Amino acid sequence: MATAATARLILFVALVTGSSGSAWAAQKKEDVAAAPAIHALRPMVGSGGDLGVSCDSWRLAVEANNKRNWKTVPASCEDYVGHYMLGKQYRRDSAAVVDEAVAYAEGLELAGNGTEVWVFDIDETSLSSLPYYAKHGFGTKLYNATSFNEYVLEGSALVLPETQRLFRKLISLGIKPVFLTGRTEDKRAITVANLCHQGYSGWMELLLKPVGFKGTAIAYKSGERLKLQDAGYIIVGNMGDQWSDILGVPEGGRTFKLPDPLYYIG
Amino acid sequence: MATAATARLILFVALVTGSSGSAWAAQKKEDVAAAPAIHALRPMVGSGGDLGVSCDSWRLAVEANNKRNWKTVPASCEDYVGHYMLGKQYRRDSAAVVDEAVAYAEGLELAGNGTEVWVFDIDETSLSSLPYYAKHGFGTKLYNATSFNEYVLEGSALVLPETQRLFRKLISLGIKPVFLTGRTEDKRAITVANLCHQGYSGWMELLLKPVGFKGTAIAYKSGERLKLQDAGYIIVGNMGDQWSDILGVPEGGRTFKLPDPLYYIG
Image (cartoon, rainbow over the protein chains, first blue to last red):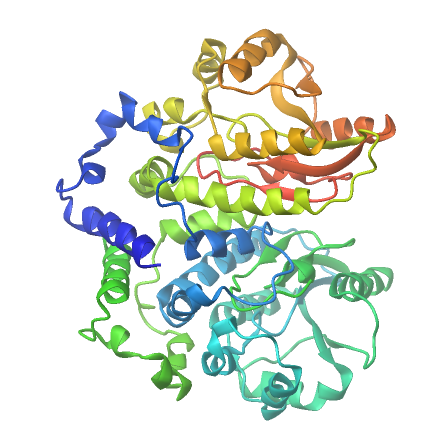
C-alpha cells in the first residue's frame, strides 16, 4: 500500500502545487493532445510495473459490483478503509448519491394520490454501524453474527445524515419512505427506537425479515417489493448499500447504491 | 477542486508519513474504537463544511450507476479525468475488474461442447478512444458524432491491454469471445482492421448495430444477447464500460463494468 499511497501523494502534490517536479506533473493537457502519454496503456511485460493490490481499485470494484462474494476486506486495506470511512470521502461519496436521488425525486410527476413509495435499507443506508466496525478491524475480520447482533440490540447505530436528508425531502414531496431490512422481525422494537432516536420519523412501513427466512437477500427484498407493488404502491426509488438491496425484479423506478467498503451481502 | 485536493493531500501525507501533525492523522485506530471521531458523520449545519463538488465522488457515482444521463464531464473535473485516464489509476482499476473476470472464468465448469461465449463491448472496453478524448477535453465537451466517427474511421484506437489479457485467457479456456458494439455495420471493415492491428484475433462474432437502428443501447444489446442465447449459446460473461452494455435480460452469467469517466451512453 505504501507504493500506491506514494504514487497518489505525488499525484495530489502535483494537483495542489502545479509542480512540474515529476514526469507526471509535466504532462500538461496541451502536451497530452500530442499523445505520447497514451502509450502508458500499452501492455506491460516482465514484472508488470507497480500494478499491485490497490485499495482504491478494490473499493471501486466493490462499488461497481465487479467484486462479489467477498468475505473480508483485504488485510492490507484496513487502514485505507478506516480512513475512508472516518474521513470526508465517505460522506462526500454519500452526498453525491443523495444529490442525484434528490434531483430525481424532485423531477418526478406524482399521481397525487399518495401511492408513491421509496424503499430504504437500514444498516449502512439509513443507520451506520461504523462504531462497531471501527472496533472490529473495518471489515477485515470475518463477520461475527453474535457480536454484531449484540451491537444492533444496543440500539446505538448512528444516523447517516445524507440519507436522512433524502428521507425528509421525500416526505416533504409526498413520497412515502419504506424501510426494508435484513434485520429480523425480533429486532423490531430496538430498530424502531434506534431510528426514532436518530431522527427518523414518518415512515410508512418497516419491513423486517421473518426469523428463520431461508433464501437470499435478493429473493427476500425483491419479494417484499413485489408485495408493495401488488398492494398498489409505485416504488419510485430504491436505495441501499448492497447490490443485493437493489437488484431483483421489481427494482423500483430507479436504484441508488450508497458506498459500503465494510462488508458484502450476496 | 483545490479544497478537495488539499484535503486528500493531507490524507495521503498522513498515510505515507504516519504524521500526527493534523487532527485527522492523530486519530489512531485504537482511539477510533473509543468513538469520538464517529461524530464527523453528524449532520452539518450552516455552510455545510466543504462538501462541494468532488470529482472523486462524481466518478464513483458514475461507476456505480448512480449518476445517469449526463452529457458532459463537469468542467471542473477535466484535469481530474485527464490525470485519471493517463495515469496509473485507470489501468489499475481496469486490472482489478479483469482479475475478477479471469478468476470467475477459471472457476467455470464448461460443458465441453463449445457453447460458452463471452460478450465484449468495443469502445472503452476492448479498444481505447483515449487519444481522441485527450484532444477533446476529456469528456467535458458535448459529444460530436462527426469528429468521433472520423476518429473511428482512422482505425487507430488503441488496445486496452487488461481486456486483451482476459480475451486471450478466455480463448485458452475454450470460451468464445463475441464483440457486441454500438458501432454501426458500415464500420465493420475498419473495426476488424483496428481490432486485428491491436492484437485481437480468434473472436467468434463481431456484432455491429444496423445503420438506422432505432432504440436504446440496452434494447439493442440485450436483443442481440437474446439471439445468441436462442441460438444455443451460453453467455457466461458480459463486459462493458457502460451500464447500458451490460444491463437488460439476458445479462449473461456475470457482468463486469469497466471504468469510463469520459462519456455516458444510456
